[in-house]
Structure formats: C-alpha cells, structure tokens
Figure 1 (cartoon, helix red, strand yellow):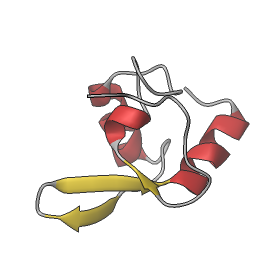
Figure 2: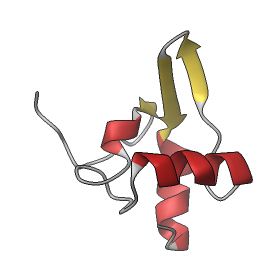
Figure 3: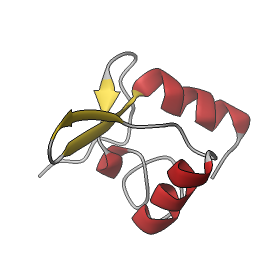
Figure 4: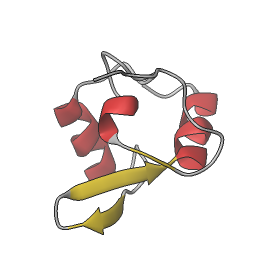
Length: 68
C-alpha cells in the first residue's frame, strides 16, 4: 500500500493520511481520537458504518494553526 504524505487540495482524507507515521500531524491514533472528542481536532465525516474521514480543508486549517 502506497502512502502519500501530501493532503489533497479538496475532498476527504482518512486517518492514516493525517496522523504519524505517514501524515503531517505527529500524534498517535488514540491521541487523535481523544482530541476529536474534546474538540482540539476537527470532527469526522462518517461515510459508512466502518468508514470515517475528515475534510482536507479542516486538516489544512489545523496544520496552519500549528496543532499537533
């Protein structure tokens, strides 16, 4: 499986493209989910029962704030 570290300009991204080791946000999955729960990180978009994604623009905005 190829992992692309660059976020798309538009659309949705999955968690593996957001958090370490392949994504730009240097946190673990459990830290990410805790941050989503307490409002530090953007809310996800549910695409199905087992599919969750985030808006690329929300992740870019988060990176712009220097979060992580």
